[in-house]
Amino acid sequence: MAGSPISLMGLLLLCFWAAFIEAEFMKYKDPKQPVNVRIKDLMRRMTLEEKIGQMVQIDRSVASAEVMKKYFIGSILSGGGSVPAKEASAETWINMVNEYQMGSLSTRLGIPMIYGIDAVHGHNNVYKATIFPHNVGLGATRDPELVKRIGAATALEVRATGIPYVFAPCIAVCRDPRWGRCYESYSEDPKIVQAMTEIVPGLQGDIPTNSHKGVPFVAGKYKVAACAKHYVGDGGTTNGINENNTVIDRHGLLSIHMPGYYNSIIKGVATIMVSYSSWNGIKMHANYDLVTGFLKNTLRFRGFVISDWQGIDRITSPPHANYSYSIQTGIHAGIDMVMIPYNYTEFIDGLTYQVKNKIIPMSRIDDAVKRILRVKFVMGLFENPLADFSLVHQLGSQEHRELAREAVRRSLVLLKNGESADMPLLPLPKKASKILVAGSHADNLGYQCGGWTIEWQGLSGNNLTSGTTILKAIENTVDPKTEVVYKEQPDADYVKSNKFSYAIVVVGELPYAETFGDNLNLTIPNPGPSTIMNVCGAVKCVVVIISGRPVVIQPYVSSIDALVAAWLPGTEGQGVADVLFGDYGFTGKLPRTWFKTVDQLPMNVGDSHYDPLFPFGFGLTTNPAKAN
Image 1 (cartoon, rainbow, N blue to C red):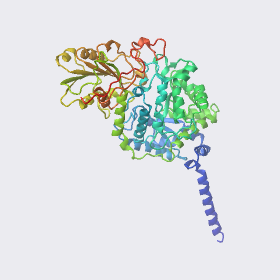
Image 2 (image 1 turned 90 degrees about the horizontal axis):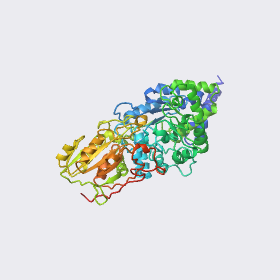
Image 3 (image 1 turned 135 degrees about the horizontal axis):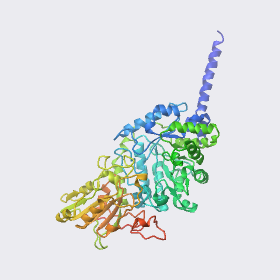
Image 4 (image 1 turned 180 degrees about the vertical axis):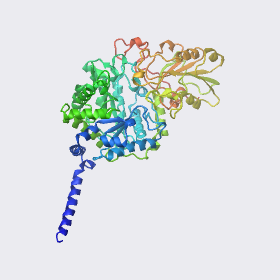
């Protein structure tokens, strides 16, 4: 038995050596190591299966802890309206996200997944979140600092539900209001869109001064990874047809549609989403020259490039007609993460086959995975993969609602105020015997929020979430002795016979998103026009237009005493009343040209045929009223 002490000593040495190896072994888990060292260390351990898993993003409806573990899935998303339960609480969201994350953490290497969601005007899928004005309204404020504060508030509300990644901002330059996503664009002017990229540091945090250009940056667990979208030229398609073809020379593409990406990359944007649209007939999801050549090599973007929803499927027409071709072309073009979002095994099997058969080189897979891991390391996902309840009070907080209300005030554009400058109708007096509020949009929270609110296409009514309708805001603002009469569709006789002091008419577009909003006539839906004529023909009236873009208004302007473009203001309708009644003045400026007729379109500032009803940059101002 004399050999026992030596055996024990040997065993101890072996244990120490194993522990030493393990520490060395787990460099990627050590936050003190430089990010590139961590990436390299993790990459050398990963199998092809684990690498391809990182490139996969699936919808939560097909996700589970088991799926995450079995297929090494790198990311999950909530598509528009994809929620754990109707009216789910922040805690319910956190528990769901954490459950999926536990599946990822239980894999051999424990690489956390990243959960993404569309938060395009606040945390818009989530019940009781603050809904901010859509981007077109923020463009009217001309205030990048305000937009940065909105980004920071949105980041807190998204983190309040356990989510670290948002598919925002949309930095499209909408050149034709017939496009169904025009409200997601800050302006027709690329300079305004560039200025509004200040939302990126709002969402992600301010990039450190010594940071390399193009390297992603997220400042920890009160911030989220952002996504500049849709690369590139999404707002320039022919006739504004969604996902269609942008016909423009390279100089035009780079000078109109690209500048917002320069600024976003300089500010450390973590991810960029590719557009469904084509440039001169080449699908952006298949465009190696612009995705790899320009974005990655020329602009030196170091975050990851993500596809849009079924984006690679739509490389072919009809979509998914030749999926192996779609995989090969999309991955070759430089897409790093694919928003599949359902048939993930078909993608995994197809990509695995192509790598094993040297159709797609391993170097392309490694480039994609390095980029995805870089974002995950930079944002601290390895150190803090699981969310807790510490931020749940941020969801729909009073502070954020006040910020949204301020944004509404600043976004309103006054297009007409009385027949002459010395006879203004606005601001309205709070004291009046009896006033009329009319129109389909006066008491409809869903309509004033627009698309991408709770559901992908938006909703009608007042039960979708918490907020203040414009009618309620008016009632809150006028003198207690002022009688407020609400009638959605009054006829002219009713208006004439009721001796109203004045009327407020609120009409506009019904909610829509993406292709459902493509519209070649841009008229105000019925009964809006008849409501305007019935009311404004009988009493002094202010018309408030709720829309995602300029609409046909020329036939009615002469009948209207005062006209306000309120865009899609979101949940905080009190901001509209704040300005109508003079607690604050009008300051907003048109972020888009207001056309006379749709025959003029496309028509943007600087065009030779420029003949607008109201030009780009127009907006009358008022001073706050003395207490009235």
